[in-house]
Length: 132
Image (cartoon, rainbow, N blue to C red; front, side, top):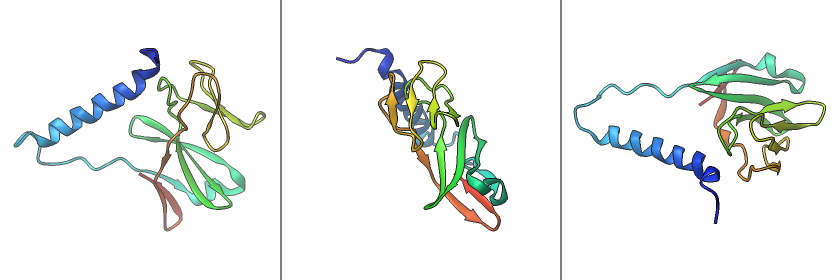
């Protein structure tokens, strides 16, 4: 049986989704829908394997260019929602809250984390990478 703490993040996400769904079904409350947040990064900033961190709404996202194309990865830890940081010397992401580690592809390495860092949609528009 898992502890209540390990389920807090998925439970919180489910409650957010239920709240959004309930608001969207309430007639007459809000007809103008806010546009989904997007983040833009000049492609020139991604040269040489650089990792660029941008805000996407209230979250932090890392954008990078790999041999296979652009990658946008959420930096919100899947365990408790803290913001992870890339550790260049060790070549992994580290969560400052619980000491969890993710590999360069966002897969859990060690610690209490068990779910990978999510990838987000990213596309090229002109000379920019557009996330969201």
